[in-house]
Length: 470
Image 1 (cartoon, rainbow, N blue to C red):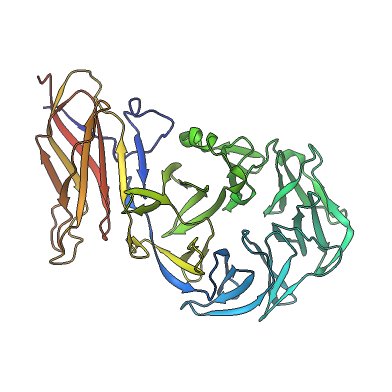
Image 2 (image 1 turned 180 degrees about the horizontal axis):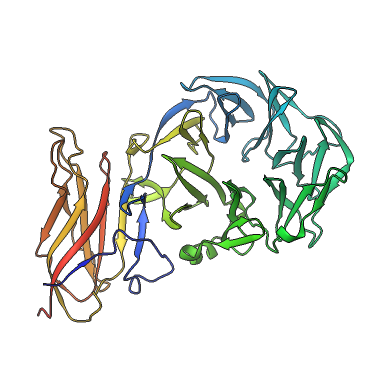
């Protein structure tokens, strides 16, 4: 009797129609493939801190040198300790725009520069102060600290500006620059190693400090493309990853830009409000994901495995996925924890955890759907057995309705009714589950889901079938 492993625990290629997708998964929601190649549930989200505002959180930054989480909401700046206790430091920042942060040290004093579309603010000790020099930027969306300078963009005129060296609160009207190769507004500023990356709407230019000018271009590292979504630009290790001006996700390392969004390229081309797309890196249990969120959907890229997923929040009323949390995320190396904004007007800062299996008490529905599988032949098949290799024994003793669900449809027909099997109580060590006699088909699409408040690990699904059934 022939047998074959079904491509349910497989990378995704959303550019393919399901009738073409015989070796790739058609889609994976709220899960990812781990180091062993098994499908597992994505990290869950739990309460950490609620700020005393009725607005969204616009910025999160873990200040490693000081050991506090900094949060910005409603123009207010807070510090939060490891136990979720917050302290209001000051107010006056813009409201509703993502915040850029840059930590630096001045004569042994730790300081943090911040901006989100207006002036640059400095957090030092327990005080928050705006840079008031008349020549300082007044429409800065990005700020970095580089070789003793503060450097930011200024949206009003499309330039980048820099402070006096070692005196970041003093600025000169003469200390500015603009894109030279194809003059376009500078919308994002980052630094990696000894270089400054100035990303415009159509170009990316790279500068370094020659200790005289002080900043000159390095043409060998430059790229012809820019970005449609300034908030999508994220540094991951020694690279930048972002949505470029052709609606592709690229990883920019040195003078090379590698396109990594081939599997979701059609989805990205259909984005209609690219400027509202934002990105962030999410680090959980040593894995790094790039989270790319538009107004309506979120794509997640596994940096090391090179695989894309869809993440959302399962709506049990509509039976559909709502959008995921906003790309306002940061990781504390000191605490070993990741934090994310709730995205609601509630001032909530949440914690992301691999050992949490719900989102704020609501179900996470991990699901995977195959393409139409025909095992390489148009002959009819009779599905004799379907064997799942899954982690079981994760439900509490006496707990019921902890289920994994399965359904199928043949050749673009309607879906069958869901079939279910139990995860099993603690002590249930049998990790194989079988379904028998699942009918006749030529090409069949499968879907597996699990929304129970337990770990979910599926390492494979194997079908045994007969050919030539009538």
